[in-house]
Length: 514
Image (cartoon, rainbow, N blue to C red; front, side, top):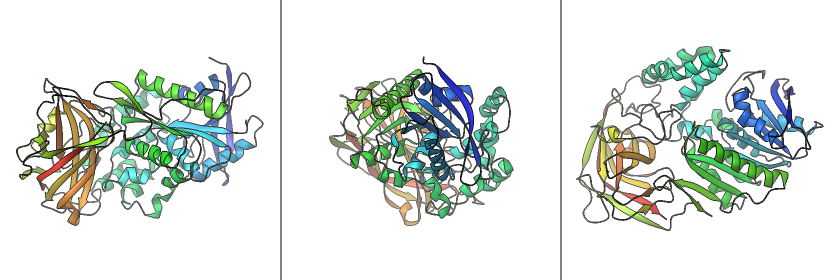
């Protein structure tokens, strides 16, 4: 490990607010400047992955705390100040004698979002970016399905605990027990009122996010950086997780950049958002460093022979390709009235279930932020009375997926306000079911009755011989998403919640085969 020095500094913003930051200078000549910005403070255990390891590799690293967090002044209004503050940090950085003349940005989650925030209008000396599990559009993440993604509740609790001044142990205990405190307000009717009262002045910013379901409302504009996908021209590496809550946006970022001919790469491992596995840490570190060495320092070999690296969760091996999706054909399975998934023959036959918000269909594994997410035995989900299950016979040969499966349902609902949660699972020879990928959508008005086409999340899974393909259809996934009120309007402000009878009169599952 290379030697370095660390200095805590203050960075002035255009409105007079000063942000706290730590500057890491390598012991020898710098190979380039690395910038990371985020709201999680700068304690040693976080700074290690955010900045320190790049200084040890010979880079100048600047780790900046977002406005209103750690020792940065101002009020914390998540994601809404990151563009102007980021521009001011870069402008200030250029005036420092330690600046190397060009910089790269790094970081995951919120630290990935802050990178997109300054790529809307690219800086001329910004030469590379490595975005790990980082969304470019928080509005779409929150309300893009038509209903609210409840992960904001847990994240808000995390941020309030981090800013409370508690010791590390007390904060970790608080996070571990947060679900007991948050579930009652998620279940409250109306949930928005209970949530605003619960957080009070600890997170005053949360109320407007819960009560502004229109993602085109000007309120959301500072959090939306789709323009960056059209404007950025620097080499950008996208690191994501197949079970990460931002997986869909990670894939969209790669596809948009690749379509424009931008130098880019996509890695999707078998990870959740908070995965702490050794494979995750090693992969992210190695690929980030290789990207920096080549595109910032200019002294490393081309970082990857293939643009796409995705972990096949069936064979448990990495799959590599130049393009994504990697499918060369599509296999279509029909949904039978008897619960069969078949390649041909008669299909259809109406089946029904009732979604009851008083006993909502639970979230079991999947693309959520909590430790309960990821790959799980979802047999208990398939066994519930409020789900429909469709299943193939045991396969006689492997079936390798390379893209996003699509489910088409002939759907009906008693009330024209209905959620649909669809999951694709792999049932092994012992009968154990494990989730592969999933999708969610809210259907309003005429859309609740008729043909519904729902793309699932991308995957590179191989179903092995002797395994069965299972499709689960439900009316919700709680506490991943807000419970359906079946009454229209914002489900978080609904004053009553109605059970809703769903019918499925056939459909099809389209599998992208590689």
